[in-house]
Image (cartoon, rainbow, N blue to C red; front, side, top):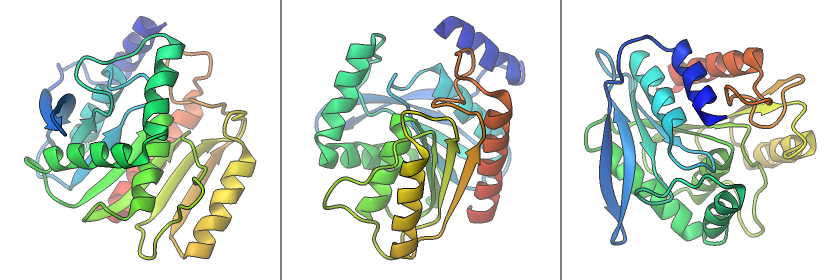
Length: 244
């Protein structure tokens, strides 16, 4: 299925070869491998991409390239470790479980990737992610530890807030792109997050796409919904234009 997914995603992109590069960096003595794609022309700012539960794959690489062509420096962060790209469902659950159970480590790994990204990019950034990566985006937003972030965006990501956490005053705007037919993360979760953000005074926008299930942006899968994918990408680009 993955080879079909990559082939279909590549078909949507310009035929030129990827202009970015793999980047090895370290965090707490361990090696990680991200992907940097520099902006075409004058940079409008930095976009940090957090991968889904597969780890950093060609999907995030191609999204980074798409953003670079739009004039943004893009950096896909690695939260699993260099060479660790799980294939089996059990292995994916194990990797995400490690980070869900150690939120401090999850945040530190995102910040390590952000630090690496800023070595060759403007400091002002938007952080975005898919599925597990979307949950990680909100984890970073709640931490309040990232500096010079002007927005957060999650695509069909986890929306629940762990007990004891909250969104601090001054949290930058949040864009949520969600499938109305998502049975994993339901509309009840969307409503709960909306109430939470309202109470915290956080600016937010929630885009809900009718008939779109969980992981609706994953081209080549039975869950892919072309209209929802394209509309959410357009909404994200508008979000970038407004905040970067």
